[in-house]
Length: 138
Image 1 (cartoon, one colour):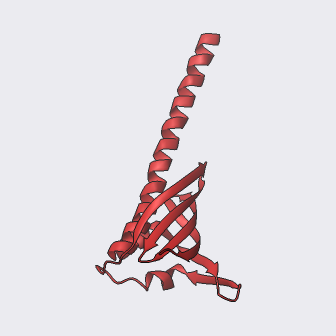
Image 2: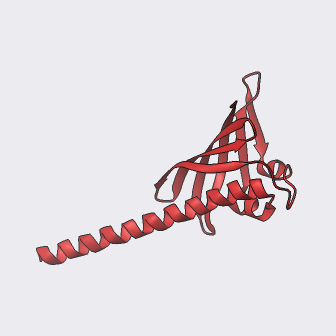
Image 3: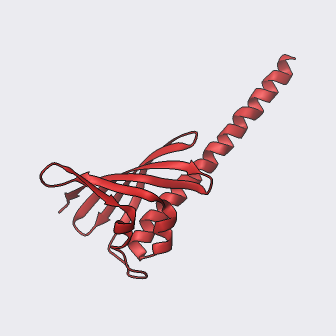
């Protein structure tokens, strides 16, 4: 009886590791769609990464909240028009169907630090909100 329980527990543990690895791979793919879509002017990839109701949040120079709907943000990019943007994933944390990630984007002399909130929806992992800050790097 104990052997059967131990084997079942080990199989369950191995299965959960596989699901966790699959989720991590899927979250990273969503973040890559965002980073490469914005750097290569691939509008479909940007749209695939975000939910239609997503928004971007930052701080205005006067210290107030700035909210930018995702449709407005996507409108800043032109299909096929590459930009000087290099992105990398700094960290990802996943619990069940929710995740957050930290992404760094270098564009010219500016470093953007993005904090993404993601949910695992019926059509996969999607970014539901992004908050970000920027700093000059010389």
